[in-house]
Length: 138
Image (cartoon, rainbow, N blue to C red; front, side, top):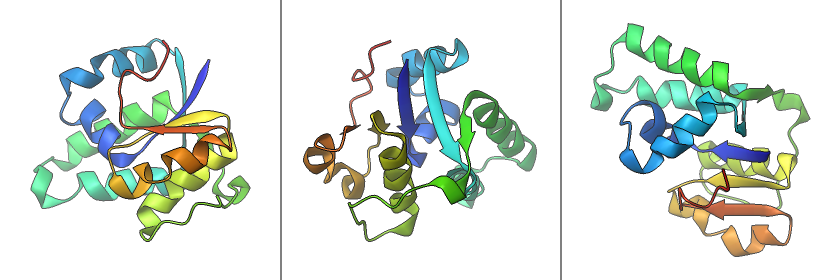
């Protein structure tokens, strides 16, 4: 089974925007065909983002979104996360790189250029970093 890390912008596509390109990923999550992993820090990052006024999501709906993601993800303890050798400027992006490095071999799906720039380097460590929603073999 694929071990997958979804960064915040992918989670937005899955749970907020219901992006048609990600429908198969959400279905695979619901059917437990993906071993999606998260940590408390990545959950907090997602919670922070969906609480922003830009998204106009009610508190009730924010809680539903977080509950759904939490119920579908395997939550790893932050204290067991290993620092990746790939250093990102943004600590909110770094947590996803560290999680993927800890879980290797795995795939990190992201649309963030600060994360994607490590794609070639990460391959040598068993981490596929991609923006391609079709990259997961489901």
